[in-house]
Amino acid sequence: MHVHVHEYEYEHEFALGAFSMPCFHPRPWARYRRAMAEMRNGLVRYEVLEGGVARLTLTNPPANAYSHEMMRDLDDAILEARFDDSVQVIVIAGEGDKFFCAGADIAMLDEVTPAFKYNFCLHANETLLRLEHTSKLVIAAIEGHCVGGGLEVAMAADLRVAAAGKGKLGLPEVALGVLPGTGGTQRLARLLGRSKAMQMMVTGELVNVDDAKAIGLVHEVWEAEGFMDRVVEYARSFTAPAKASLAVGLIKRAVQTGTDLPLEQGLALERELQQRLFSSADAAEGIGAHVGKRKAQFSGK
Image 1 (cartoon, rainbow, N blue to C red):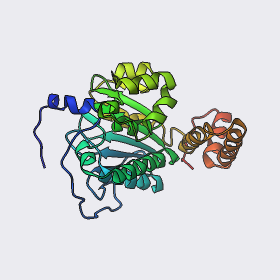
Image 2 (image 1 turned 45 degrees about the vertical axis):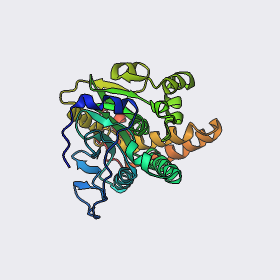
Image 3 (image 1 turned 60 degrees about the vertical axis):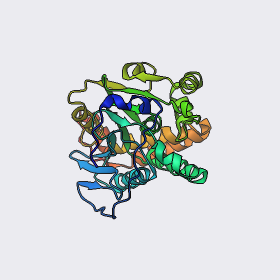
């Protein structure tokens, strides 16, 4: 289905952090291993790019609103990237340059039972936790509006980069009489602190990308022209041979898991991960290159 709608007609919907779209019927299972694949419902595209980067693209135009079917596709794509030894960094993006993701499909939520809504949120939580638990760096490439559940997806990434002047970010679910239920209340508070996160959520405030960077919600803001090319180049800077991607992944594991543990247990986790790295080819290469005053050539192993 091709939809011709002017972008300004989306203003009210994206301000609520969600976008009403017709229901999509799952496509027949057609997933197979190759450089580019469409997940079973056709709502997430999986690509393996040169240099060890996997790009997961939310593809539900015009606003990339997500349903349970999209979350199942995203879950599948995360597992695909996790088990793919050629992938060292994951990039999550939205189709087009107007929306990263405008949140959950309100029309779908209006039609389903409270029990379905609960399980929908539960599965979304599990999917984003799976993303966080994957020992590969995840970068959210935010081009366009990133609100409601879309921001909740982006906050599950390790790094967030945004295109200048392309949209707003926020968690405005309070306007629908609900709370940010895909990890928003927990991740935003951990990112910004309780006070600022509370203010944003109870007011439903949306911020532009420059303000989002100023408060620490995004890490980098880059020019819109050539944005995705720059994101991929940035992602490759964390892969072998330039960077010890195994160390990058285990730094992620130490931070993601260790910061929720008491200090002594966190230090124990750190030691175990460090011992794994001490036994790696990359550690031998990195230390040897430093001593030999040469540039290290890492293998990611």
